Image (cartoon, rainbow, N blue to C red; front, side, top):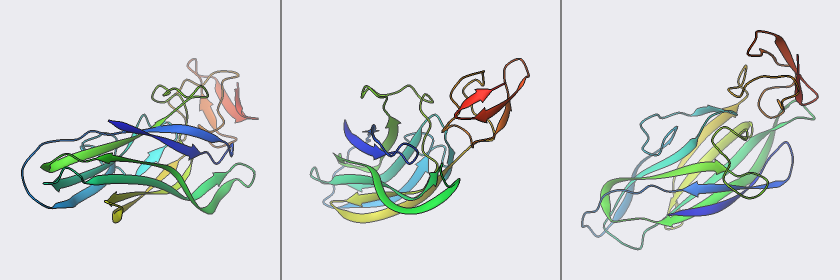
Length: 201
């Protein structure tokens, strides 16, 4: 079960597509619904909770733990940017922008977890492999809503790493992965600088 999201990236100011994936759990009977907890994580069960991520993070999840005895409960998730990195100004700029949203119908159960993964898509509209496209740098909030009512708002950040996970090599793209001017070693130990958007070794 999933939904398609639309996202605006700060660096390019163009629309790209993201996908929100959902994992749901376990049935019981009751006649009410509620949110027991919500957390940002590296996985869909909240086992690896985080509030700080990097541009090269493999997966960013917004997880909601809930209970419901109803079959008509809707869980909505909205990712908002409150500050985004400006390449031109070389700083974070305040903004109020919804960059992704989606919804799903919850299942009956107690202590179920709805795990929403922010999956980037490539220029063709297909889901990109994990780590293939950098996440945007900035401050964000993941709003979790039950039947349209805000139940939790989770702040989180995405930052530039000192050096990225993708291999550093002459001419490879570094824009978006690290801050301009970053120095990192390539696989043979040469110092490379991120200049004009590509690595120069």
